[in-house]
Image (cartoon, rainbow, N blue to C red; front, top):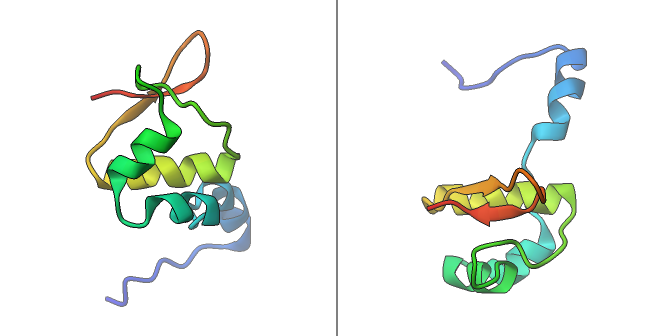
Amino acid sequence: DSGVLNIDSATFYELRKDIVTPQPLIDSIFKGNVDTLLSHFFDDNGFIAFELSYDEEKYLIDILYRNKILVNIACESGYLYIDN
């Protein structure tokens, strides 16, 4: 088993928007320290305090998830917040 998933181009095009890629802004702040990331991007109430692009937000969520920090989206405001 090679660990490679073969898909057709139409499927790849559809899934491409969900691929998480490294983002320079996030990496420049993260540098391996999740606490720095949290204090920079979230306020004291756990809500996102910084406007990010869609790709940056996906990458931020991915890093937090890998560090066992769950986030959610507030129903009324649509803002990202820490959920643990």
